[in-house]
Amino acid sequence: MKETYVIPQRFFRNVEKYADKPALLSKIDGNYRPILYRELGNYVKSIGLVLDSWGIKHGDRVAIMSDNREEWIMADLANVSIGLVSVPIYPTLSPRQVFELLNHSKPRVLFISTTELLQKIVDSGYEFEKIIIFNKPQDPKIKWIQDIIKEGANILLENPRKYDDLTGKVNNGDLACINYTSGTTGVPKGVMISHENFVRDVDNSITIIQIFPEDVFLSFLPLSHVLERMGGYYVPMILGATIGFAESTETVIQNMGEVQPTILISVPRLFEKIYGTVMSGALSGSVIKKSIFYWALKSGKARMKNEIEATPISSWQKRKIKIADKLVFSKLQQKTGGKLQRFVSGGAPLSAEIAEFFFCAGLKIYEGYGLTETSPVITVNGPGHVRLGSVGVAIPETEFKIADDGEILVRGPQVMKGYYNNQEMTNEVIDSEGYLHTGDIGHFDDDGFLFITDRKKNLLVTAGGKNVAPQPIEESLKLSPYISESVLIGDRKHFISALIVLDQVAIKKWAEDNSISFEPYEEFIRNSDLYKHIQKEIEKQTVTFSRFENIKKFRILPKDFTIDDGDLTPSLKVKKKEVLKKYSYLIDEMYNE
Image (cartoon, rainbow, N blue to C red):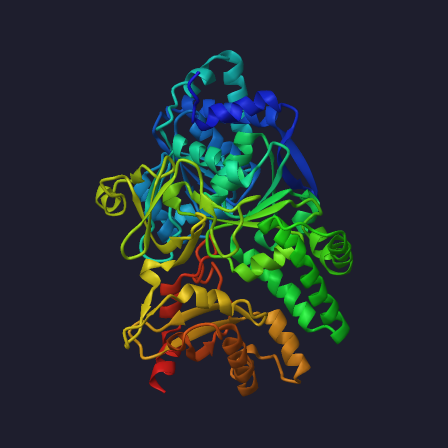
């Protein structure tokens, strides 16, 4: 029998195979409650049958606007199971941004989580034929998803074959979603991703990353982002694993302790925060505490080398690792739930030093790489295939070329069908040979590991004609426990400068130790002793870079980057264009003084 790459067919195999196994875990009234595969399958069928009864037909678009929760999964599976196209919308977007995406994709139906979010739709001015809400509505015109499930269950009783007939008409090449890029620059583009794009990407990725039905995931990255959609949702649903939902991005650590996941997919920001907190605590401790910490880190390197280089661990090293775990690393291991076997990092570059720290602590981070346009995975590290600082090796069926200017070109079954209603832009990024031009600069080493240098558009060309890749420098700066984020400046300038965001926990402790008033913060960040301290940190973290890459001047920003302030995309990438615009007065100050 020919293999199918249709999402619902793969999902319903698991509904039969793992009927009484938890598919989803949600925190209700203080405790995590399971939804079994059998139950989830029935909910999906019911919702799909109601959509069909409304005349929503194969190929129609259906929007989903919600935070991560079980109903998001139900809605999407119902859509794709009857040939509809999901259009995920980030809940953090403004009404104007929401309208732009909806007006472009023109969905007929909306799934939405709360009345508060529904007001954003009202303010946008876009009108849907039908709206289904996850929380119980006040307006009788709005359909409650629980009522939809009951209505669909009755349809299924009356016509048991109807749903199978609908699912049987879905083909490999049918669109599963139009996923709008979160966009660090420019207008978001509607990436058309088919069932086969997603399923082939799942099948090929898990051969390297090694995921199994026994795995438990914790979902906290937005499901509107393709990394979480594919890696944190389609992978477990296609394999028969379990998904637990974090209550919010702020409670991830707490929820890890409750769900006890074996795997967690994240962007580097989570790892940077954990690393910064641990390092800050170690540096602020007594001389003895510092000595124990660094001894433990040194002892943990034997464990790291065993995983990465297959170097044997001697019995003496095993004893030292056991002591290091007991004295230092066990606290961090327990905070992750005690069962975590691997993290997967994607969406942005991960510092090799941070990855090394986690490996030493007995927590493996496997970094991967991809784009929304590639569904998204094209390379990934995995057990037996690890090189720190790289984004891994090519997954099966994926071909690469490196262009003359260093740009990475990729071809494979996961490459999108194109940009929705924009053939001209599609032709700009996918060439006549079918290679997608990623916009990233990089190279492969002799063992096939890919290293990303920077975004092609991010390269800074100084007034002296020197090319500076900001990404490695920015990542290096964040290794300081006192620096949370940085943005390099210098394009067509005579020297490189930086905007710095401080880690407020670490810097507050430094201020207390040095008898410097931390409040008001706006005055504190102008303190001359603070500037000298951060200058030393910058020099320490950039000592290996060339002279022309040195940061001559910097300014400390008055607050952290946030999604709400427009500094970060929903996937937590820095919107450099917005940041440079917002703080242009500080940039002018540095270059005009």
